[in-house]
Image 1 (cartoon, rainbow, N blue to C red):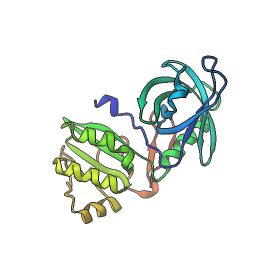
Image 2: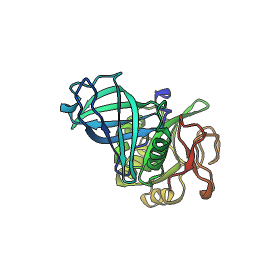
Image 3: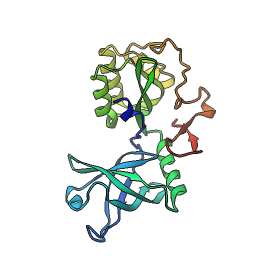
Image 4: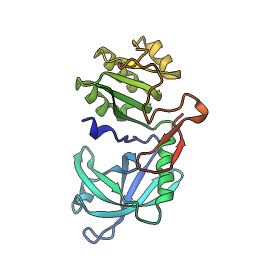
Length: 242
């Protein structure tokens, strides 16, 4: 479980959709759907079930990623297809061997910087498994978050990179506290919300470290130097989520 969840997948706060251009197997038709999550290695898009009849895992595709700031070409292949309410969730692994990789990286980094974007991942500290919340904790993260909380494997929830939350996010932390999972390293508005809601907090991680850890994706203590490095994108570190 730890290995599968070390890769951060960000749930975009800003509207983000993807279109898939037609291939010989299903005709020259553009299919467009809502992007559910995104990382530097790919994304997951929800498509109408009727549009997926001829798609299959391993098939190579191309299309466009659409944001408020414009559209970028992508090229990749289908990694998995999962039936979901409202359609089929299609996982796309991006190929980096085509000419438009730089604009695509900019689009992905733009999504990560959006203040309403959020993600979670797991890190090991000694014998402890720590759940890290990155960015905005919201309803779209609830399924994975609550699954991990109820798994009985978490030693703590690290909120050092959590920059905000909605009411669902606050409720999720309340459930975690009731499950006796320590909430550690909360700062700023997140700490204030926990104080107002009277949700108990821990001051140290289970391994005995204070707020400063060796976590490689931890944001700098200085707001002026906060950054997020997208996994799999060498040399690209962008301003963090504020």
